[in-house]
Image (tube, rainbow over all chains, first blue to last red; front, side, top):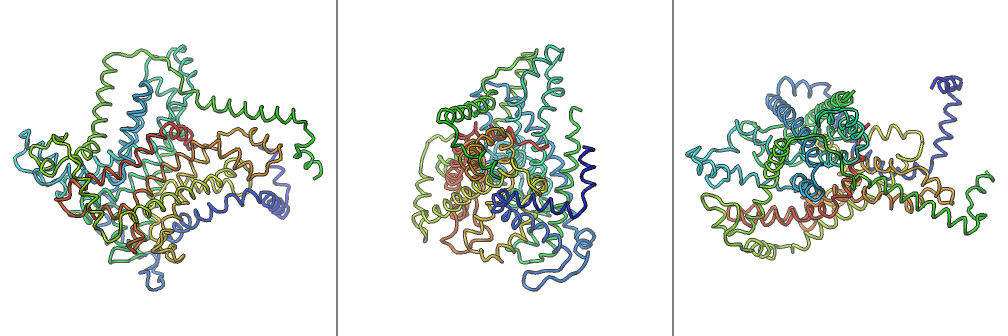
Length: 316
Length: 322
């Protein structure tokens, strides 16, 4: 390490530039291979983030050129927009509950089914993973939470004698967040769940044997001292997936609770963003919507980076 | 320079030596695969555990399995019930008289639309096939140098890809719409296909999987005189088959369910999901038909997953972030 540092210091900046240029020329083939994908990646992922950042300081309606207005969008967002504050609160409540719960659930279920015989494991994986690939099948929760007495939940509760008249599940603000949490958890055993199952299968098994000889008493010790540290990288990947989806809840809310939901009870940052920035909405306040998008971007990135730091400490 | 060329030429090897090299390569590959599949055959040692604990675990798994499967089973059952049975009180899960009327109704409704349903189906198929194929090809072509070559900027690009996993598409929706409209792609299926090529989770998984290919395999091919593109298509691509099947599953799901959203306006460009959602919008009387629609849309991604589960898990084993 020190040696290379010394060598680098001795090179003048010009020499270094020449060296870099040489390396770039040498890697022509590599660049030609990454070019097509990178072009699309930059156009549809990197560039939009940058554009959104700059548009957030403007007033822009897609028809006239954007006009620079400084921090006005952000000031309005945090000081004058009560609905945004509701959305912010809802998003945090949803994320703080569904994020960790779904994460732990994904890991615990992966861990539990890992020891089952292969065929049962295969079947359970399918059962747990199916909801997240079922596309718009979450719409059927509408039938379950339906507000008349034919809704499955109402009918069962009436039948059991718990309630006398049907409850307006989807129209009552106090049930909005619990319903969203249930449906979101139902949907949440996705890619990270698969990553955990796969990760558990690749843990070095000789370690378990060695540890058993060394005197590990029970499965909890085994889990904490061997399994978790071995799976650190999958744990981090899973965290990213769960956090991002927990903070991005929107379509479930819109299709179950309506848009906007009663008293904004199911309003999240993303639905607020759609309200101002979707081309179907009549507002077309793209500058303002970009400010919301930028805030969301930093919340997502920030919470991901913090959680990464925490997980990195597991088992050490 | 001359020395290098001499090295690359395999000609001065005798046929026997060449065959031996090919054999070596094959045994190497075989060993690599054995390493990867080893875990499947392993039975692991069990630490002391109680019968009570086992029962507890079984109960949890069954309870959550029911929670997970119930809505899906309910839909399948509903699609096989007549309207009178769907709205019976108290509700029953399983149909008493199995009827396929909902599916028949669905096909009749489909037959009466102005634009034949086959048109919508072809649209969905076009979007899904081209989007998925393009993504798999471009992302693995890009993942190969990112994983195996050293060139300036590689580290930065890898970082960017990891960071881009950390925010959802909602963040970029507005500027993406603007870019697509600048490119003149509005009201064209390309507006959905081309952005799908840049699916970041896909390239991330592909790169992680390629990291596990031993460098010796690639070097051996290089000595045989193959150029980078030949190595990519002949050595790398066959080895990462589980990874591209995973990418296909992941992207297939999202493209299969797309409804065209803000990008498609012309009726005969719209995908199947859109057409079916119009049928479902018919209200309470269409509850049974709606269930039939959901079942049909559900069958495809779940079948694809059933077929490919083990390969998908093989890929996900290498999904880790450092």
